[in-house]
Length: 194
Image (cartoon, rainbow, N blue to C red):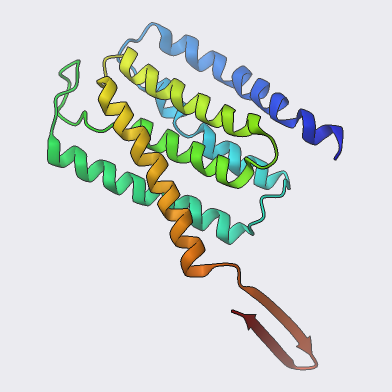
């Protein structure tokens, strides 16, 4: 393996920390601002997409990768917003009654689990970085009085389990099918191995 692959996770972390610094200082004075969390909740998923775009091997093609990621986000988000509108719990700052569970934590942990599933095999630091950003997002939601600790814990669990469920169902339903396409003259042959 080249030196690039061994150093890539640390370089990537440094780049994202550099990018996030201005946003964190802008939001530092605004206790109830969600700008910082609106960005950090998507960093793990954005990291996975950047790594895929950079050509790092994740054992899935683009359709499988994007399909699993989209399905994970949709399932996790649907569960979260269904519960938000069922429980109607007040936020600690009393701004509305959609506190339980945390949607930001759900998406952050869903993205971190997707990153782990797709690129955790390259280095444990990829997974650690994704879950660290998700944890930072969840902690900051509590610090800003937008959620109780159990709101973000439930959101984290939903994001993690929703993504695990998506990957499990994807593997069971679609498995690893080989598709071969051949062209000969004016004929196209497609072969599936089930």
